[in-house]
Length: 521
Image (cartoon, rainbow, N blue to C red; front, side):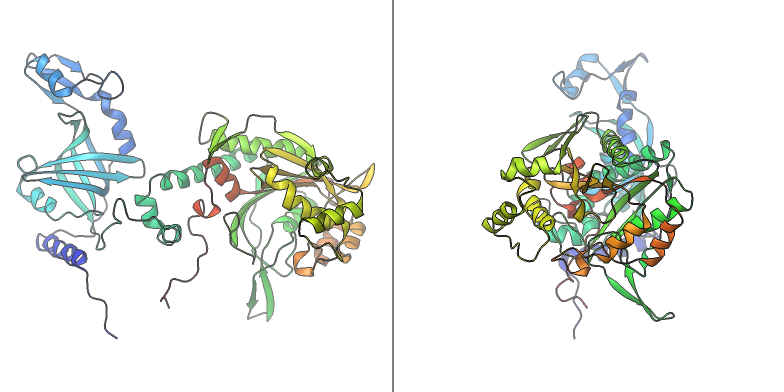
């Protein structure tokens, strides 16, 4: 089979690669110390001065905003002089290139911003000009020069020396017809980060959000741990696991679907405030709100309950929001989400009745309502039917943020019941824009009741969709005494989605799961 030949664009780039090598320049670059982030260099604009012939230095006039003036005209009014500015060293990728005879204007980009580079044949000398003639869009260069303004007022580094740092052999996407297909953007995330406006900033915000989550928890005395990702029993959530095989032990293992049961073991072991922020894996569908591999935060506090976790969840969300902006409002499509505290708190049953008009305790009316909206209640536990109706009818209307509290106990096998009503579990879920962001319980610590619930499958649910999987070692841990506790889980990807105004979970996961590329082996 014949191999693909180079395209015209690639051939031109390889020709420039050879020219660089003929000049004795390593086209793959080397260490480049002392360069300043472009964002920091741009912040040095006030250090630029206009020096008159008598040595007096003037501050530049406003070159942006409503007070902007024509810079060329302003200089002519001041009389003879020259612009002076600080020496800077920057590095970045070429994202715009405008050659004009003996001048070349470049825009380079690093992860803090863009800046214009002025390369003049006379100003940089013969050797540097030879380098400049080998430059292509996408190449990475370093520049030493003076920070100043062009006659049009554009903040610019006037190059004095060029440093070649990396050659690119493929052209970047076209400016207006490039990475528009969502799947292509996710598959070529490295190009998406480089050339799609706002993408890099979204992922930098994600990092700041994760840092803020840890900061809130660390400041309150929680200890971060790392639990196992391979489990012998897929427990702690209602989800299908991924299955793998350990050859030496000749046993099947499961990629974890939750963090819960191992963290509770640590409560038994005396770690009273504990959390893990890590990946979990669920062998389920892919959608704008679901990815089979995602990031989960789980937190447990001895001697707390679900009200403790409600307060903590609100603090985590607000701390995350403060890490990326100064106010409580986030633009979400055509609407605005207002995270001003305190968040609303509503019971499951009152929301169910409000949005369906059905009394939650009337099993027949609930089943009839389910049939009318196309659900199939036959053979299912009444609380399962209510849950399906709640997901279908109520959740999309929970614009939030709103804590939905006090769930039917039959849905929550790991949750403590309310003392005055054992049919209700001390559980909440936090909803925003119809999405569940957080889930929390007053944790069940009665080993006998826990074993009974493990043994009792919910009617109509197959085992792989139920949380009721028997974990004998976990029961043994409970028999050694787990203190009363509150537990909280937060879907980090969904939280990032909401706080950054992203409409798909795949837009906040750097490398979401994709089908194999056509023709790939």
